[in-house]
Structure formats: C-alpha cells, structure tokens
Image (cartoon, rainbow, N blue to C red; front, side):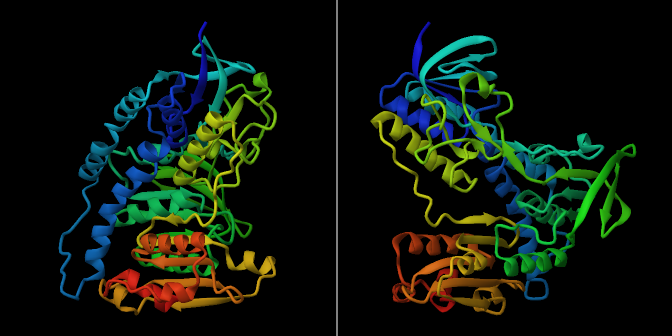
Length: 449
C-alpha cells in the first residue's frame, strides 16, 4: 500500500491552501472531504451570504434616500432570482477547486475519513497511510438541547432556501443571526433574534453593538435579550416556540426557526483517539506551530484547531500556508495573528480590529478613547445613513492604535486600513499625514484619530 507524504482531511480554505503548496513542492498529497470541495466560506458561508446581502444593500440604499431624490416605489427583493444569482457563483466552486488541486499534483477523494492508527486513516473503509496528516475539517453548528431542536435549520439550509417565509426566528445572538436577520428584513420578512444573554456579539465593542441593535430595530428586526428557548413544536406548516425571559414563559409563532447559536470544531467522526490526538472544546490541541501536542505526525488548522487565531477564513488560509511551510521545511513558525479585522456584515456593518476597551483596561495600558458619532458626517449624510459611529483606542505613550471599532457603511473597508496601521506600528500622526481621495470614506480617517 502506498504511503503518502501528506493526507489532508477537509477541503476548505485551510486544507486546500496546504494541499496546493505541498503538492506544488512535489510531495505526494491526497485531500479528502465528505462534502463538495470549497468549505464553508465559499459554499455555505461568507461568499454566498455576501451575495444575498447585496440585495439587502440595494433595498436599504433606496429606502434611505426616500424623500431625498429617490422614490423606492414598488422596489422589492426577488428572493428566487437572488438565490439563482448566488448559485451561479457557488455551483462551479467544487469543480474549480479540484481542478486547481489536480494541477498541483494533489489527488482528490470524496468520503468520510476516520483515523485507525497513528499514521493511518480509512476513507469509507479503504485504508490510507501517510507520513503526515492535516486536520482541517472546519466547524459545525453546536448541538442544542431543548425539545424540538430538530426543527431548526442551520446557516447552510438558510442559504439554500427557495422561498423566504414571512416570520423568521433566529436562536442565538451571533454573526449568523444578525446578518441573516438584516437580509430577511430587507426581503420583506419580520425577523426576531433571541439571545440568552444581556449583550450579543460579545467579541465586539458594546457601544457599537447597541448602535447596531437600534439600527436593526429601525428596519423591523426585533431583538429579545435574556431569552431562552424551552421548546419548539411543529404546528403544521409553522412552529410554536416556547421561550423564557425574566422567569416568565411565553410563546412565539414562526414560519422558520434558524440556528444561530454558535459553532464548534467538526471532529466527532474522525476517531481521534485511535491516533492519540488530544483535543478539547476548541479543537485539536496544537503547539504554536500547529503540530499536534500528542501525535507529531498530525497538524491542524482553521476552525478544527485550538489556535490563538480568530475563527475567520483569512486566518484559516494563513494557518494552512504556515502548516505547509513548516511541514516542507521542518520549521516551527507560528502564524502572525496581529491586527486581524473581523466583521458582522449587517447593513451597515459592524467591524473590529485589535483590543476592546475592557481588554486594554485589564492590561493596565495608558490609552485614550476617541469615540465619534459619524452619523452626521458627509460620507453618511450623502447616502442618508442615520446610525454610524467609530471608537479608536490610542496608546498615549507610543501614539499607536490599540484597537478600532466601527459601525457604519463601508467601514468593512476602512477597518483594513486600521489593521494595516497596527501591523506596521504606524502612529496616528503618521496616518494623519497621508492624503486621501476626497470625498471618500477613507478621507474620514484623519478626523477619527
């Protein structure tokens, strides 16, 4: 039986990046996945979601300009046509991914992989040996324990809906719920988000999150805090959701209930014990250079690994490339996680890079907070936006940016400038010295710091 140099389990961004790099270097590489090649981001997450968001953006932009020169009239979002547009992007992805892998000499397989030894896996019962393995299986929706949880659909199913029903209930106050609720509201639905805590989106600045909640309410998204689901019952074409808030029980009727209560590493089918691969709730236990702490033949990257990186596609790609480089060169390089931006792509978006205010306080740093309401600034006045703000944390000693937090149109682009400035160690004085095209959102930068 042939022994490969590398077997990659998972054909998402991390796995494909590593397989291509090692294959191009002349290694014998095989990659396997039970799902179509491309992973969550390209097929079931970031990219298709952003395509649907475009429809919501157009509707929102027209409504913001109502009475300011634009009459939205009967403008509506055609869900079926928008979904067809989405599929025109996602449908070719798996074949194109495999074609690219083949060009780099990578063998592509389809099936369920499980370890049967320290250096061996089975794929649907067939044995495969390798010197090294990369686990890059991504994440899956975490299990919900209330009665009737089986009636919830997940983000993958939402992104394949042929029709969007009128009443949509989202369970959990995370990225998925807020992003899909904003799309649903602009498509004519009445979304409700339930969160068991007081503050949703806890990885983001609290002031910016509250601003997003107010903006959400303005478009018809209802948000219920400290509300837990007790049960979901099928009422024949609709659902009755029993919830508890402040000790009181009530019922909500919905046509669709969506799981937006978080994800966890997708490792349950891999039989990791057979290969002595330590793992926990955050994924495969790895050293800084992404090698397993218990089996030196195994590496892990992306959402499947308990790395210091954020669970984001760009981070997974970086980790995949670093893993490949470490394998090829026998190095122990650690990925660079400095100043990685993240975004909730609502309309408008909520973004962050660097430290939260409470994190800087906990670290006893000497810093100032530059908090600005930008809703009345020209860049937002021009398009009729009513909710926008920016908070920048600046180190008083070095004049360098510690963190930036923003909620508003096009801030998903502007946050990248803050991230680059942090990565390069630029001061606010240096940033202010740059001349930007005017009028543009980028030209607001100097006034924000």
